[in-house]
Length: 305
Image (tube, rainbow, N blue to C red; front, side, top):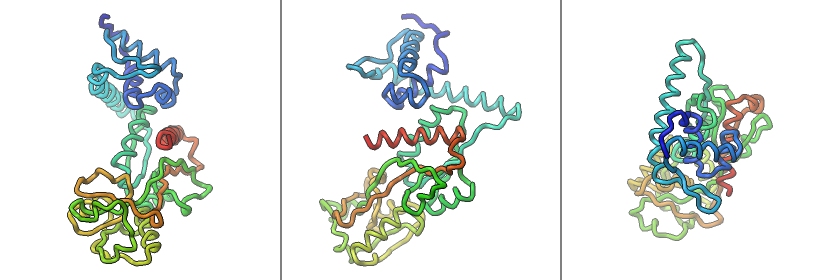
């Protein structure tokens, strides 16, 4: 194979990066609005243009070779520089860049939101995204007041208004969070009713996790003794790791701090949070929100599978 620089296009690089992200031809096709055949053709054409193989076939699947992994950072920089150049030209011409104002829970910035944003940028590279973090209550108020265009929050009965389009992403369960140095960290499960003598660190009102914890403690029949109440989940989990107190935390926080262990609660105290995208129904047809809804539906399908 020989190098053919005429065959390397930004479109092919975008398809390539989408495949490296999704690792499946059908998902790339859905994300980019292409057919599976077109995606496969673009990847094969990129290989021909580069003069080397990027993928190997295992059964019906394409598997990225080391050459593909080596190309990723250069392709990312190339597309990013091109996007910055386009933006500069539009700024000089006085054109506005489409912007999406997205709100989300603090805890979702660990895994879910970065993955959603990557997928959304692959769908719509021209879209600028502004991210706002906060509690469930604050984010819903921002959505109502028009300060954000959409939110990813804990979706309960209080926000199932017919005026909102709801796209579930995943369900998450509350766990007993304790310092890894505590003897409780070795338990197979926790009987919350037996934890009355423990000191707890909690989130302030308005967070979906705080609401789930309140219901769990009601089920256990006691009001927890609070050492501290904080306004974000990252401060909370660090305090737990330092042994300030125990807490109840969603499973999505697992692994954030190795000094913290999440132990399952006994079945009677377990509660589940549904994390979902909420979009005003009156704005669902806007192209930026259509792309966000499509990406969230794909995320939800992957989580369910």
